[in-house]
Image (cartoon, rainbow, N blue to C red):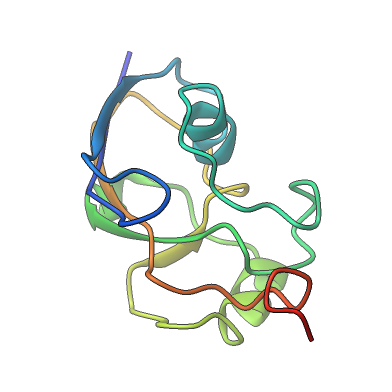
Length: 112
């Protein structure tokens, strides 16, 4: 069972977190199931970027993103080479270190 280290995020996870999650589960579901309330405005259907994360360790162990995920990531705030949508990351057997960006592009929560 992989161990997921969530780095501190001022709002969603101020102290950071360490999560044990089963392989085959999405990173988004693993975080949500462990009280890390990452946004997921599209209900995890790969239609937005609100669950954007940066994989600080273990990126190379993940499956390749789909073209749709890559297209969406181009619109994410704070995009980095090791960015992924957490709803699309399926956990394997390897540990990860994850950073949740400070901001997200979510018109509903930004009162637009």
